[in-house]
Amino acid sequence: MKTIIKLFLMLAVTLGAAFPGLLSSAEAANIVIMPFIDNSGYAGVEEVFYDNTIYCIKDQDKYTMIENDAVTTALDKYTKKGVLPDENALRNIANEADADLVVCIELNKIAMEESIGFNKEDKVDLEIWGNSVSYNRETDKFNHRKLHDHETYDPAMYVRQNYPLRKFARLLQNDMRRIMKVKGFKVERPQIQKF
Image 1 (cartoon, one colour):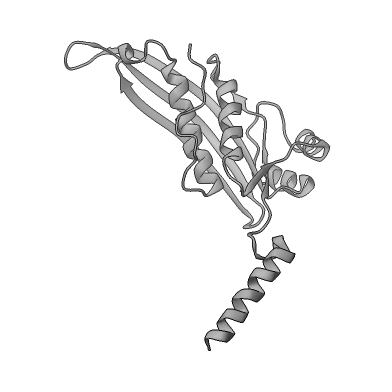
Image 2: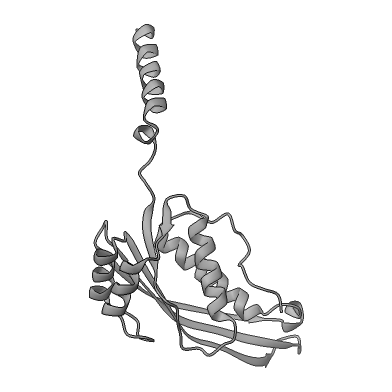
């Protein structure tokens, strides 16, 4: 019995060496990140969006971002600038661009309002609103999620950084993790420049 098990193991190792793709996981899924829709008018959000989505994808071996003529043609054909695409648009883009996953993020508002905390110190109420849509061609599932975050923070703690952008970066990373169905990213800190 031990001899048979050893033979099977040797066969598996030999096949793995001769055909590397045979025993490895499936090839990386193609993902299209659609142009960011910024209705917030907040400086720096577009750079934060592209930096974080690209880092999220590069961090995962099972995804490859595609940008080619087929993607550009499909985006021009099925989307309008500044308008969040619907399920049919995402499905058509996925089919024409041969993408397994299509993602579009819209940011509508980053609002800050100063307030006084319980201990009479200045606080800032931060609120972020947006939308996220995605289509998974493998499962034929469309997902629309409202992005919202509200937090009161002490501005003195974030003198050297733009905290609203950090918060948006975290919100974006969490949503990308959910869409891509991964547990986490190696990049722990949101990728933003210090101001």
